[in-house]
Image (cartoon, rainbow, N blue to C red; front, side, top):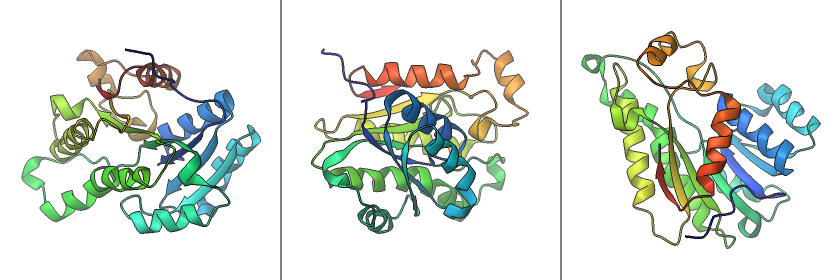
Length: 231
């Protein structure tokens, strides 16, 4: 099959969790290498993210921050419509990184809590797809996932189920949507992995700790391949 375009110079990318650990690295990568226009969605107040936004803008990026729940289609649509951006015609890609990670034994699993924690990743995937369906630009749709979705893991049963779901959701999307679920192992002291005492144990068990550079290069390589689920 023909090689896909990967990231696009001057493209417009909507990123959920775009100021989190991995999200910030991705945002900076797109800004510095591709002069991308960034539409970042998060629940935090913009004033709490001033430093990160300033760093991105200092790197030459055109950045807009939308305070909204990624599981709320109407809130995201209103926020996007308030921008001076013709996003329905210009959006190049949607990158879904928002999610919650918490470790606890299955015996302590409370259904209501688990559903609330799953909202960002699971309902957020559906909500962002609803945003994508409003676009005439046919943006690429990318969900960041975890190898826990396949292997499971001690004390992360709910998190594993979330990732397994979003991978299946992406694979069930209509073929007209160029969509990817990319399952990573633990990143090296970034995002949900930052300060995680299990990092050393994961490395001893054969999992590769991923540096920001290596992870982003891997993501770019995946986006040059046919749509689908990648680990």
